[in-house]
Amino acid sequence: AQSVTQPDIHITVSEGASLELRCNYSYGATPYLFWYVQSPGQGLQLLLKYFSGDTLVQGIKGFEAEFKRSQSSFNLRKPSVHWSDAAEYFCAVGATDSNYQLIWGAGTKLIIKP
Amino acid sequence: DGGITQSPKYLFRKEGQNVTLSCEQNLNHDAMYWYRQDPGQGLRLIYYSQIVNDFQKGDIAEGYSVSREKKESFPLTVTSAQKNPTAFYLCASSSDRLLTDTQYFGPGTRLTVL
Image: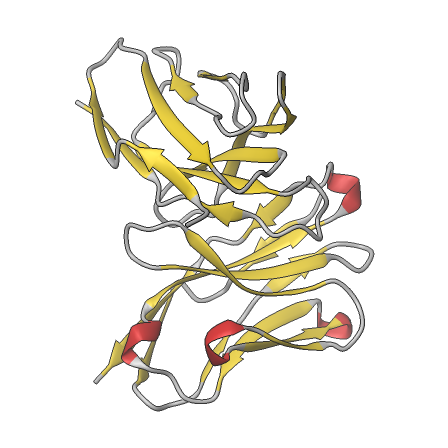
């Protein structure tokens, strides 16, 4: 069965510092990969997604993610965080043999230090 | 503006009561979803619908029911059979149920059992 692991429950970074949020998945073939962001008490918004092709994917709000098949990872990065980036970030994996459902990670809460 | 609305934002239920959460979308999407979110966990799929008058159980459908009488509406009823209903409920929609279709989320309903 597919699974998604986000190893970090919380991450604290200083404003202006770089950010990397980790996501590892378990799936035999190339999965469909997503990163979503959730502001407190709100719904989720898609940041970026990967299906095929270039393994470095650009998203909204200056985020990017890199698919590394050999490491079964899809880490999210941003070169310089802003206070408005404080939120919870979710990685999700979809596969055609899982009835097209998305399997979600538990989320990583990003805290920004001024 | 196109989007997804959920109401109410907060809902309180007494033990033994059924309650219905509203979800409406004006994106002309065929597919709609209900997810449950608990602290420290990823989203879990309750029900989904690919088309009017058709819906399928997700991973945690027990104690919940849905209907899809109109394309734009997908209400969720939390019945008294749901043992632990206190959670944050998210409704989403996508143009189709392909993994390449982005899921758009509503702002959520927080249900508390008193």
